[in-house]
Length: 226
Ligand code: BTN
Image 1 (cartoon, rainbow, N blue to C red):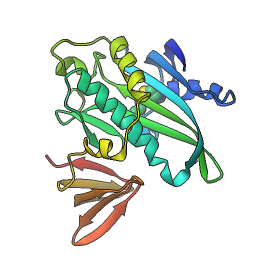
Image 2: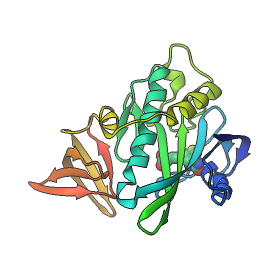
Image 3: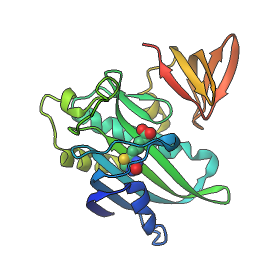
Image 4: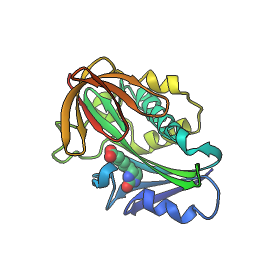
């Protein structure tokens, strides 16, 4: 697979879009990003020392209703990579990888749909290795703190690319989910409430119970009550 390594770009998720017409899978990595993007229009701090990578994958037959498979595959690859370097990762639905209760990596997926199929997906991953956390020390963690032998960003990047090439299943994804049965605070638009996380469905929805009612969440955020 074609691999492109950049010193700097605004966002690897944006840079990679020029390859959409070529129809071939490609990975783009940057040492730093000047305008890294997170989910929900947030920015993603991307200073040198971290891994900032996007992978463009084309699909022949992926129904849009099964698009969550793109997320589970990426999340498992990140968790397996983090484990290789001594971390004990866990997943916070829908797109964060935590270690020691702090954010280790974030995943931003942008799917390109054609009718009711996913034609291609851009999977963007930002993983903290030894990049400065600049004020985010209370909520973010780096592999540097979790490894007995702190790895370089290049080693982690190469391991992640390799892991992205491996197969994984929904049960592999579930093996990194540890918040089921726990109390979570749910933010759904303007609404915020406490719930118990019950089950993650293969289509990516999270079943919670709140005030005795079952609710299926698809576009919410949770924070885990430790
Ligand atoms: C999140 O935590 O909200 C998702 C963060 C995703 C960051 C990665 S870094 C590589 C790729 N390029 C971007 O601009 N964003 C993703």
